[in-house]
Length: 528
Ligand code: MSP
Figure 1 (spheres, rainbow, N blue to C red):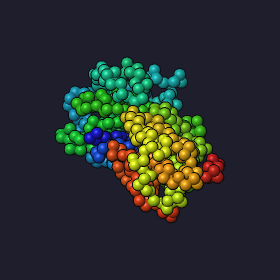
Figure 2: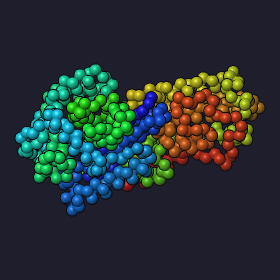
Figure 3: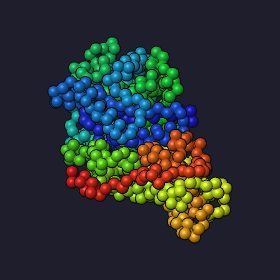
Figure 4: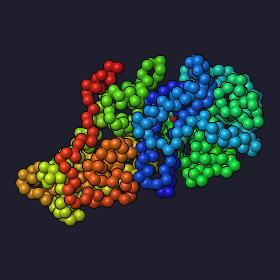
């Protein structure tokens, strides 16, 4: 694999980040970190979407300028991603100067090509969606189905993008590329929406929406937010209609746009039409994840159940975000809705990360110190003594074999499914320890056998630490440290003998990699 380019949706900045925004960034970070284990040229883009009527209105209600609101809130997103160890390569803001300039050029190019034309229009505009709604999509009471608000009637002379001209080509592309939209069951929804697709308004009058990018030769109009926002995927890496950067040439087309299911139409129809008009290659995949509910209820300001991702870290007094990342990433199968609850969080991470995984390493290293003073002897290795303890060779082979299984899940953006495979190796290793009872072998003075059981488990732990790294980078790094294992290894470099013979560890160097999440803290958090 020569490169991997991945993006998230860019978040609106009219509030602080919540757990739903965090879910997407965590999934994306995990995919990005996984692909960093497969290529040296990985680029992860995220950012904030800062123009539009919604921001303008929120700023006005607070008595501050839109730019002040954007600066304040963009920082909250950056701080949250830092706390969650989201390791992006660029954080783009749609108010960044380089972005604004190129968006103007993109608009101009589309206009020069005749893909954009001016037209008098009247329609229902929902500022929550930042788009015109088709009257047939409104509820019986005439409300936006997503925002439960009456859209505004807007009568303006706007620029329109000839989306209908690309309709057949988009349909063909979706049908010919079954893995273009992930999960594939969403492709039918898109094909249905495409049936009555019309040209879309791509500008607003400056008078009504002042907070937007100006159209170069028409000062009375500003560029519609979605054209501005979607373009971030190419402006961020140096697209320029007059000659793009080397970085753009090496990264585009994007490997995957990670987005929520609610904005699939914009990405798989509008964006694809724009790219076709710009004559640029199309994204390889669009991965639409599901939505996160809180205690099985939709998050909303009016219900007062909006959970901030950093509050979870604070409530449970977590030193690292790993447990939260793991929990969120495994909360739903690919593309399905997930749920967050304090109680479930505590149970799952204690079971998987503390009891199964962390404890396995801790017990094994402690026995190595107790029986062998922390030393791994030559004769312990399965490669030297393959017949010594039944199941040793097959366990190591099984763990190495799982690397491809996990990679394959990632190829399909099945993050929770991949995690399940990783935990299944942990379970297999725990079973192997129980079956072979190294403490009994030691009592019976079968020391080579005992050493082989421990060494086999440590070998498997090297594989586990690499595979779990994208989900839990801090825990994995600590595990690798105690195993003297190089966590920066690429996945295809991992072998069956990563543990080096000789003194591995002292009693003082052993420490639990993950402390159980405290029940009392969970209760405190629930009360809050
Ligand atoms: N600004 C647009 C995206 C432009 S991308 C060129 C937008 N912003 S948003 O802030 O409303 O949403 C940002 C992302 O967060 C979207 O992918 C959206 O689906 C996701 N989520 C928002 N709430 C969510 C949940 N409750 N659960 C999971 N993801 C959710 O749309």
